[in-house]
Length: 149
Image 1 (cartoon, rainbow, N blue to C red):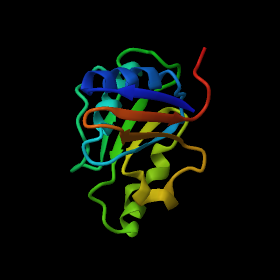
Image 2 (cartoon, rainbow, N blue to C red):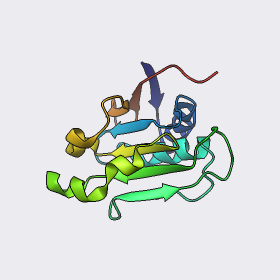
Image 3 (cartoon, helix red, strand yellow):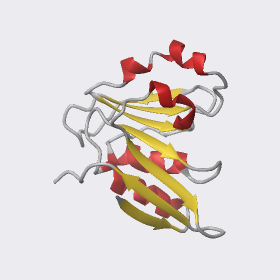
Image 4 (cartoon, rainbow, N blue to C red):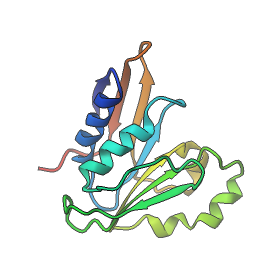
């Protein structure tokens, strides 16, 4: 487990850059934290670290945003899919999303509010938890495999 501390958006973004180095094609990264904790900002840093040059936006209303890397920072990576399940209310809604199609060896998936989809996620997922530890400070815990060389 890796633990980071952030005192603001810029630091959270930079931690996302660091976490991107822990990821490999096929990974599913579960993002946990309260509203406003910084999950999307962290995802922006992760995406930049994975070679995504597009503007990263929250998929709260679209459920999923797909991004193709313009810079080849990770061999074999064809896309990063950023999910946000906050607005999904019933478990049966996940059947229509075709999640299994996204969980493949050529993509990395980032999932906010994953708790709503526990029965539909791969068993071997990596996880980031963002917790408030003060008014502005956050503790960001990453659990998963060792970083790439």
